[in-house]
Length: 502
Image (cartoon, rainbow, N blue to C red; front, side, top):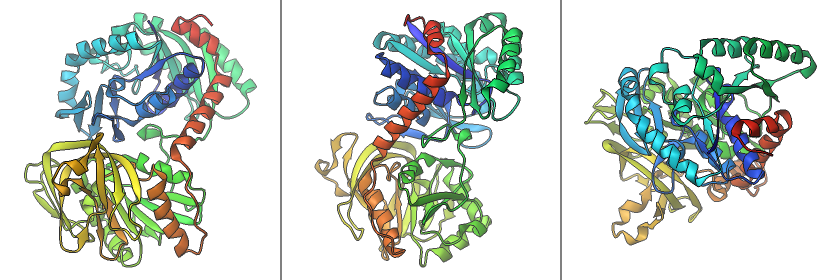
């Protein structure tokens, strides 16, 4: 069946975004297309309609293909908990935690599963667009590879090799990658793509000719450098540090920050600036402070405490507005208890004490899609939606009330469950200026985002506005992406590589 794989000379060369573009182009051309990445490493994850966890890059690719995201698009997700450890997600559920060496030694046990799942996909779609990870030239990893040439070999896929010219040394990286591949692997590489080009293409052309003479592989195109409001892999994200609009939203860039795509929808607001801070000096006086999710809540809490940033946050809390999401929500509470060592060696740590809640970490991971309405905000019945990914549960003290009532979990009406407390999420303080929630993507829907941002606008004597639908903006950006890539690569060559006559 028809398939193609995009590999790269390194991480962050633009593999994910090129796959996204190809998914949309092929869909526009009338094909049913599906993205696939056998193994992704990312702290940005997503919960599917059936309550399973997958990487965000494949979510965007699914949207580009006109599909609802499903875990078969990303069977294995690795979520780093430290430099040498990670949580392993297999087919959307926690498989276990391991060191880098432990996972390296167990990878081959997943080969049969990956091959079987891919073959089932081939039966359902016209074309599968695959994405590699990092570089196929990591020769120390080749023997147990299940994501680059190992995966391409397993299902006999042709490969396009992408390089990032913006970093410099693109010709060396493309030629060097080819040099390190085995003879049969070199035969799989049918074309190169040079990504993120700035400048005059005429100056580049002699280099393209010389490169083809060296590696004997044609260049399918040169994609220009561009900026679009589309999420990308972790390493490619630029964390803005400047105030660029009237409404100033500061986000703490935690050491193990995760799911920072929660902030993407705020970019849909033209008068909103989102900046990331790491020190108390950078805090300033934002209109809203957001403490995002993290893969290691306790370690990150200790880090911001030791840096002095916690004291600055507490001082800001007297007059400012704070929203904590997932791990950020837990940090705002009185205490975080971890008797089973879910997060590490700390049995119990003190929180910021800005919300009257206490968190207990449990072994079972909660992964649900939810719909919710506000119940204790100044504006009630404000609807939102998103997903939960957490291993902690919060209990309320006297001075905290739930922020949301969840009325739908994974498609089930929670009002029918009998125990009303099951439908509570998040917390809000008595003053109404400090809030927390477990719901990732809480700003994606227009209602909650509009209420929050308009409240900030009113404080600054700015006229309230209607919020734009994030999903429609995302679709427009994907179409822009497809147009850019289609204009700058040889799609006839791509179709020939796929094995389709056009």
